[in-house]
Image (cartoon, each protein chain N blue to C red):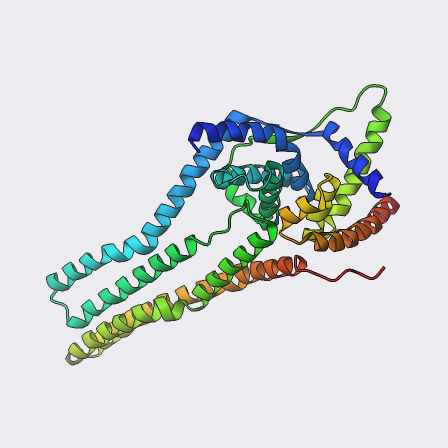
Length: 174
Length: 207
Protein backbone atom coordinates (compact mmCIF):
# COMPACT_ATOMS: atom_id res chain seq x y z
CA UNK A 1 0.00 0.00 0.00
CA UNK A 2 1.46 3.41 -0.94
CA UNK A 3 2.40 5.80 1.89
CA UNK A 4 -0.31 8.43 1.32
CA UNK A 5 -3.04 5.76 1.09
CA UNK A 6 -1.74 4.25 4.31
CA UNK A 7 -1.84 7.64 5.95
CA UNK A 8 -5.43 8.36 4.93
CA UNK A 9 -6.51 4.88 6.09
CA UNK A 10 -4.77 5.53 9.40
CA UNK A 11 -6.57 8.87 9.77
CA UNK A 12 -10.01 7.40 9.06
CA UNK A 13 -9.47 4.41 11.38
CA UNK A 14 -8.32 6.78 14.09
CA UNK A 15 -11.73 8.44 14.03
CA UNK A 16 -13.63 5.13 13.87
CA UNK A 17 -11.70 3.17 16.49
CA UNK A 18 -10.56 5.85 18.90
CA UNK A 19 -13.10 4.46 21.39
CA UNK A 20 -11.52 0.98 21.39
CA UNK A 21 -8.06 2.47 22.02
CA UNK A 22 -9.33 4.54 24.91
CA UNK A 23 -11.24 1.64 26.49
CA UNK A 24 -8.26 -0.73 26.33
CA UNK A 25 -5.88 1.96 27.62
CA UNK A 26 -8.20 2.81 30.52
CA UNK A 27 -8.74 -0.84 31.42
CA UNK A 28 -5.02 -1.62 31.69
CA UNK A 29 -3.74 1.49 33.46
CA UNK A 30 -4.38 3.18 36.78
CA UNK A 31 -3.56 6.82 36.10
CA UNK A 32 -4.53 9.27 33.35
CA UNK A 33 -0.87 9.81 32.50
CA UNK A 34 -0.30 6.06 32.00
CA UNK A 35 -3.56 5.82 30.07
CA UNK A 36 -2.44 8.53 27.64
CA UNK A 37 0.95 6.93 27.30
CA UNK A 38 -0.50 3.50 26.56
CA UNK A 39 -3.02 4.96 24.09
CA UNK A 40 -0.15 6.69 22.28
CA UNK A 41 1.84 3.44 22.21
CA UNK A 42 -1.17 1.57 20.80
CA UNK A 43 -1.53 4.13 18.00
CA UNK A 44 2.18 3.85 17.15
CA UNK A 45 1.83 0.06 17.00
CA UNK A 46 -1.23 0.43 14.77
CA UNK A 47 0.82 2.56 12.39
CA UNK A 48 3.73 0.09 12.39
CA UNK A 49 1.42 -2.89 11.79
CA UNK A 50 -0.84 -1.25 9.24
CA UNK A 51 1.24 -2.39 6.20
CA UNK A 52 0.74 -6.00 7.37
CA UNK A 53 -3.05 -5.67 7.52
CA UNK A 54 -4.37 -8.05 4.88
CA UNK A 55 -8.09 -7.58 5.40
CA UNK A 56 -8.62 -11.14 6.61
CA UNK A 57 -10.02 -9.80 9.88
CA UNK A 58 -12.42 -6.88 10.11
CA UNK A 59 -10.80 -3.53 11.00
CA UNK A 60 -12.45 -3.47 14.43
CA UNK A 61 -11.18 -7.00 15.24
CA UNK A 62 -7.72 -6.07 14.00
CA UNK A 63 -7.71 -2.81 15.97
CA UNK A 64 -8.63 -4.67 19.14
CA UNK A 65 -5.88 -7.22 18.52
CA UNK A 66 -3.23 -4.53 18.19
CA UNK A 67 -4.58 -2.61 21.20
CA UNK A 68 -4.73 -5.69 23.45
CA UNK A 69 -1.38 -7.11 22.30
CA UNK A 70 0.22 -3.75 23.03
CA UNK A 71 -1.53 -3.30 26.37
CA UNK A 72 -0.57 -6.77 27.57
CA UNK A 73 3.07 -6.23 26.67
CA UNK A 74 3.22 -2.69 28.00
CA UNK A 75 5.08 -1.91 31.18
CA UNK A 76 4.78 1.24 33.19
CA UNK A 77 8.56 1.58 33.47
CA UNK A 78 8.72 1.92 29.66
CA UNK A 79 7.38 5.43 30.23
CA UNK A 80 10.79 6.59 31.38
CA UNK A 81 12.22 5.85 27.95
CA UNK A 82 9.51 7.95 26.34
CA UNK A 83 9.64 10.79 28.84
CA UNK A 84 10.66 13.31 26.22
CA UNK A 85 7.96 12.30 23.75
CA UNK A 86 5.63 15.14 22.87
CA UNK A 87 2.06 14.87 24.17
CA UNK A 88 -0.04 14.18 21.09
CA UNK A 89 -3.21 13.02 22.74
CA UNK A 90 -5.17 13.64 25.89
CA UNK A 91 -7.97 11.84 27.69
CA UNK A 92 -10.68 14.47 28.10
CA UNK A 93 -13.66 14.22 30.41
CA UNK A 94 -16.56 15.90 28.66
CA UNK A 95 -18.31 18.47 30.88
CA UNK A 96 -21.43 17.36 32.72
CA UNK A 97 -24.14 19.96 32.19
CA UNK A 98 -27.81 20.49 31.51
CA UNK A 99 -30.92 18.95 33.05
CA UNK A 100 -29.41 15.44 32.87
CA UNK A 101 -26.29 16.32 34.84
CA UNK A 102 -27.28 14.33 37.95
CA UNK A 103 -27.94 11.23 35.85
CA UNK A 104 -24.68 11.75 33.95
CA UNK A 105 -22.74 11.96 37.20
CA UNK A 106 -24.28 8.67 38.36
CA UNK A 107 -23.40 7.06 35.01
CA UNK A 108 -19.85 8.39 35.20
CA UNK A 109 -19.41 6.88 38.64
CA UNK A 110 -20.86 3.57 37.42
CA UNK A 111 -18.38 3.49 34.53
CA UNK A 112 -15.51 4.28 36.91
CA UNK A 113 -16.61 1.41 39.18
CA UNK A 114 -16.78 -0.88 36.16
CA UNK A 115 -13.23 0.05 35.13
CA UNK A 116 -12.00 -0.41 38.71
CA UNK A 117 -13.48 -3.93 38.70
CA UNK A 118 -12.05 -4.75 35.24
CA UNK A 119 -8.56 -3.67 36.37
CA UNK A 120 -8.76 -6.25 39.16
CA UNK A 121 -9.49 -9.10 36.74
CA UNK A 122 -6.70 -11.30 35.32
CA UNK A 123 -5.40 -9.70 32.11
CA UNK A 124 -7.04 -12.11 29.67
CA UNK A 125 -10.37 -12.03 31.52
CA UNK A 126 -10.23 -8.23 31.35
CA UNK A 127 -9.73 -8.50 27.57
CA UNK A 128 -12.73 -10.82 27.25
CA UNK A 129 -14.93 -8.55 29.35
CA UNK A 130 -13.93 -5.50 27.28
CA UNK A 131 -14.93 -7.28 24.06
CA UNK A 132 -18.15 -8.53 25.64
CA UNK A 133 -19.11 -5.04 26.84
CA UNK A 134 -18.46 -3.72 23.35
CA UNK A 135 -21.07 -6.22 22.15
CA UNK A 136 -18.77 -8.35 20.06
CA UNK A 137 -20.04 -11.79 19.04
CA UNK A 138 -18.36 -14.98 20.32
CA UNK A 139 -16.87 -15.45 16.86
CA UNK A 140 -15.32 -11.98 16.89
CA UNK A 141 -13.99 -12.46 20.42
CA UNK A 142 -12.48 -15.79 19.32
CA UNK A 143 -10.81 -14.03 16.37
CA UNK A 144 -9.32 -11.32 18.58
CA UNK A 145 -8.05 -13.69 21.24
CA UNK A 146 -7.17 -16.73 19.15
CA UNK A 147 -9.48 -19.02 21.13
CA UNK A 148 -12.24 -21.40 20.03
CA UNK A 149 -15.78 -20.02 20.30
CA UNK A 150 -16.64 -22.70 22.87
CA UNK A 151 -13.73 -21.70 25.00
CA UNK A 152 -14.71 -18.04 24.76
CA UNK A 153 -18.09 -18.97 26.23
CA UNK A 154 -16.55 -20.91 29.11
CA UNK A 155 -14.04 -18.20 29.98
CA UNK A 156 -16.50 -15.36 29.55
CA UNK A 157 -19.04 -16.99 31.88
CA UNK A 158 -16.42 -17.31 34.57
CA UNK A 159 -15.07 -13.81 33.99
CA UNK A 160 -18.56 -12.31 34.20
CA UNK A 161 -19.18 -14.04 37.52
CA UNK A 162 -15.92 -12.70 38.93
CA UNK A 163 -16.73 -9.25 37.55
CA UNK A 164 -20.12 -9.34 39.26
CA UNK A 165 -18.48 -10.15 42.61
CA UNK A 166 -15.90 -7.41 42.13
CA UNK A 167 -18.60 -4.88 41.27
CA UNK A 168 -20.45 -5.78 44.46
CA UNK A 169 -17.24 -5.22 46.43
CA UNK A 170 -16.66 -1.92 44.64
CA UNK A 171 -20.15 -0.67 45.46
CA UNK A 172 -19.75 -1.74 49.13
CA UNK A 173 -16.44 0.10 49.33
CA UNK A 174 -17.75 3.30 47.76
CA UNK B 1 -26.05 -5.64 37.90
CA UNK B 2 -27.21 -7.89 35.04
CA UNK B 3 -25.30 -8.16 31.71
CA UNK B 4 -27.62 -5.75 29.90
CA UNK B 5 -27.17 -3.14 32.64
CA UNK B 6 -23.42 -3.54 32.37
CA UNK B 7 -23.49 -3.01 28.64
CA UNK B 8 -25.81 -0.02 28.98
CA UNK B 9 -23.48 1.55 31.56
CA UNK B 10 -20.53 0.83 29.30
CA UNK B 11 -22.18 2.59 26.38
CA UNK B 12 -22.63 5.80 28.34
CA UNK B 13 -18.89 6.43 28.53
CA UNK B 14 -18.68 7.60 24.93
CA UNK B 15 -20.64 10.67 26.02
CA UNK B 16 -18.40 11.17 29.07
CA UNK B 17 -14.82 10.66 27.98
CA UNK B 18 -13.06 11.25 24.74
CA UNK B 19 -9.57 10.85 23.34
CA UNK B 20 -8.45 14.19 21.93
CA UNK B 21 -5.84 13.41 19.27
CA UNK B 22 -3.70 15.97 17.48
CA UNK B 23 -3.65 14.00 14.21
CA UNK B 24 -0.94 16.08 12.55
CA UNK B 25 1.34 15.75 15.55
CA UNK B 26 0.56 12.04 15.76
CA UNK B 27 1.50 11.53 12.12
CA UNK B 28 4.72 13.46 12.65
CA UNK B 29 5.44 11.27 15.66
CA UNK B 30 4.74 8.00 13.82
CA UNK B 31 7.02 9.07 10.95
CA UNK B 32 9.72 10.08 13.42
CA UNK B 33 9.18 6.87 15.36
CA UNK B 34 9.53 4.78 12.22
CA UNK B 35 12.78 6.53 11.27
CA UNK B 36 14.15 6.15 14.79
CA UNK B 37 13.08 2.47 14.89
CA UNK B 38 14.93 1.79 11.60
CA UNK B 39 17.94 3.73 12.88
CA UNK B 40 17.95 1.77 16.16
CA UNK B 41 17.97 -1.55 14.28
CA UNK B 42 20.71 -0.33 11.93
CA UNK B 43 22.97 0.96 14.71
CA UNK B 44 22.41 -2.16 16.82
CA UNK B 45 23.67 -4.29 13.91
CA UNK B 46 26.58 -1.88 13.34
CA UNK B 47 27.47 -1.99 17.03
CA UNK B 48 27.30 -5.75 17.36
CA UNK B 49 28.63 -6.87 14.00
CA UNK B 50 30.34 -3.83 12.46
CA UNK B 51 32.71 -3.31 15.39
CA UNK B 52 33.93 -6.89 15.11
CA UNK B 53 34.43 -6.53 11.32
CA UNK B 54 36.26 -3.19 11.66
CA UNK B 55 38.51 -4.71 14.30
CA UNK B 56 39.81 -7.37 11.89
CA UNK B 57 41.92 -5.03 9.63
CA UNK B 58 42.97 -3.03 12.70
CA UNK B 59 44.11 -6.26 14.29
CA UNK B 60 46.10 -7.31 11.20
CA UNK B 61 47.65 -3.82 10.89
CA UNK B 62 48.73 -3.77 14.55
CA UNK B 63 50.07 -7.32 14.31
CA UNK B 64 52.30 -6.48 11.35
CA UNK B 65 53.30 -3.05 12.62
CA UNK B 66 54.29 -4.26 16.11
CA UNK B 67 55.63 -7.66 14.93
CA UNK B 68 53.38 -9.47 17.37
CA UNK B 69 53.48 -13.28 17.80
CA UNK B 70 51.12 -15.54 15.82
CA UNK B 71 48.66 -15.96 18.70
CA UNK B 72 47.72 -12.28 18.15
CA UNK B 73 46.05 -13.31 14.86
CA UNK B 74 44.11 -16.17 16.48
CA UNK B 75 41.64 -13.57 17.77
CA UNK B 76 40.56 -12.82 14.16
CA UNK B 77 38.60 -16.08 13.66
CA UNK B 78 37.04 -15.54 17.08
CA UNK B 79 35.87 -12.04 16.09
CA UNK B 80 34.49 -13.34 12.79
CA UNK B 81 32.73 -16.20 14.58
CA UNK B 82 31.06 -13.83 17.13
CA UNK B 83 29.98 -11.39 14.38
CA UNK B 84 28.70 -14.20 12.15
CA UNK B 85 26.84 -15.86 15.01
CA UNK B 86 25.04 -12.62 15.92
CA UNK B 87 24.24 -11.83 12.30
CA UNK B 88 22.80 -15.28 11.53
CA UNK B 89 20.86 -15.35 14.79
CA UNK B 90 19.43 -11.87 14.17
CA UNK B 91 18.36 -12.73 10.62
CA UNK B 92 16.77 -16.04 11.71
CA UNK B 93 14.84 -14.54 14.59
CA UNK B 94 13.85 -11.26 12.95
CA UNK B 95 11.60 -13.31 10.71
CA UNK B 96 9.77 -14.58 13.79
CA UNK B 97 9.06 -11.17 15.30
CA UNK B 98 5.48 -11.14 16.60
CA UNK B 99 3.03 -8.98 14.67
CA UNK B 100 0.69 -6.99 16.96
CA UNK B 101 -2.12 -7.55 14.44
CA UNK B 102 -2.25 -11.32 15.05
CA UNK B 103 -4.65 -12.96 17.56
CA UNK B 104 -3.67 -12.54 21.19
CA UNK B 105 -2.82 -16.20 21.73
CA UNK B 106 -0.52 -16.37 18.65
CA UNK B 107 1.10 -13.11 19.70
CA UNK B 108 1.80 -14.41 23.21
CA UNK B 109 3.16 -17.70 21.79
CA UNK B 110 5.52 -15.82 19.46
CA UNK B 111 6.60 -13.40 22.19
CA UNK B 112 7.26 -16.32 24.52
CA UNK B 113 9.33 -18.15 21.88
CA UNK B 114 11.35 -15.00 21.27
CA UNK B 115 11.86 -14.37 24.98
CA UNK B 116 12.92 -17.99 25.54
CA UNK B 117 15.47 -17.67 22.74
CA UNK B 118 16.78 -14.38 24.12
CA UNK B 119 17.22 -16.00 27.53
CA UNK B 120 19.03 -18.95 25.94
CA UNK B 121 21.32 -16.54 24.10
CA UNK B 122 22.29 -14.60 27.21
CA UNK B 123 22.56 -17.66 29.45
CA UNK B 124 24.97 -19.21 26.95
CA UNK B 125 26.94 -16.04 26.25
CA UNK B 126 29.98 -17.71 27.80
CA UNK B 127 30.01 -20.47 25.16
CA UNK B 128 29.31 -18.53 21.97
CA UNK B 129 30.92 -15.17 22.77
CA UNK B 130 33.17 -15.04 25.82
CA UNK B 131 35.02 -18.36 25.50
CA UNK B 132 35.89 -18.02 21.77
CA UNK B 133 37.33 -14.56 22.54
CA UNK B 134 38.91 -15.45 25.88
CA UNK B 135 40.92 -18.45 24.61
CA UNK B 136 42.93 -16.59 21.90
CA UNK B 137 43.28 -13.50 24.12
CA UNK B 138 44.71 -15.52 27.01
CA UNK B 139 46.83 -17.59 24.60
CA UNK B 140 48.37 -14.37 23.24
CA UNK B 141 49.01 -12.99 26.73
CA UNK B 142 50.47 -16.36 27.75
CA UNK B 143 52.81 -16.37 24.78
CA UNK B 144 53.93 -12.79 25.45
CA UNK B 145 54.46 -13.69 29.11
CA UNK B 146 56.53 -16.72 28.13
CA UNK B 147 58.64 -14.67 25.70
CA UNK B 148 59.31 -11.99 28.35
CA UNK B 149 59.97 -14.39 31.23
CA UNK B 150 63.63 -13.43 31.28
CA UNK B 151 62.78 -9.78 32.07
CA UNK B 152 62.13 -10.49 35.72
CA UNK B 153 59.40 -9.77 38.24
CA UNK B 154 58.29 -6.41 36.84
CA UNK B 155 57.36 -8.02 33.48
CA UNK B 156 55.57 -10.88 35.26
CA UNK B 157 53.69 -8.38 37.43
CA UNK B 158 52.66 -6.27 34.39
CA UNK B 159 51.46 -9.39 32.57
CA UNK B 160 49.46 -10.57 35.59
CA UNK B 161 47.87 -7.13 35.77
CA UNK B 162 46.83 -7.24 32.08
CA UNK B 163 45.44 -10.79 32.46
CA UNK B 164 43.50 -9.66 35.54
CA UNK B 165 41.97 -6.76 33.60
CA UNK B 166 40.97 -9.03 30.69
CA UNK B 167 39.44 -11.61 33.04
CA UNK B 168 37.61 -8.88 34.99
CA UNK B 169 36.10 -7.46 31.79
CA UNK B 170 34.99 -10.96 30.67
CA UNK B 171 33.49 -11.73 34.09
CA UNK B 172 31.71 -8.37 34.08
CA UNK B 173 30.22 -9.00 30.61
CA UNK B 174 29.06 -12.44 31.79
CA UNK B 175 27.59 -11.00 35.01
CA UNK B 176 25.71 -8.20 33.25
CA UNK B 177 24.13 -10.71 30.85
CA UNK B 178 23.03 -12.98 33.71
CA UNK B 179 21.73 -9.95 35.60
CA UNK B 180 19.55 -9.03 32.60
CA UNK B 181 18.21 -12.61 32.45
CA UNK B 182 17.40 -12.71 36.18
CA UNK B 183 15.92 -9.27 36.60
CA UNK B 184 14.35 -8.51 33.28
CA UNK B 185 13.86 -11.45 30.95
CA UNK B 186 12.89 -14.27 33.36
CA UNK B 187 10.09 -12.26 35.05
CA UNK B 188 8.80 -11.30 31.61
CA UNK B 189 8.90 -14.94 30.46
CA UNK B 190 6.97 -16.03 33.56
CA UNK B 191 4.42 -13.32 32.86
CA UNK B 192 4.02 -14.54 29.27
CA UNK B 193 3.74 -18.17 30.43
CA UNK B 194 0.99 -17.19 32.85
CA UNK B 195 -0.75 -15.24 30.10
CA UNK B 196 -0.53 -18.18 27.71
CA UNK B 197 -1.83 -20.58 30.38
CA UNK B 198 -4.85 -18.32 30.85
CA UNK B 199 -5.54 -18.54 27.11
CA UNK B 200 -5.46 -22.35 26.95
CA UNK B 201 -8.64 -24.30 26.41
CA UNK B 202 -10.47 -25.28 29.56
CA UNK B 203 -13.44 -27.53 30.27
CA UNK B 204 -16.82 -25.91 31.03
CA UNK B 205 -17.27 -25.08 34.70
CA UNK B 206 -19.96 -26.98 36.59
CA UNK B 207 -22.63 -24.50 37.74
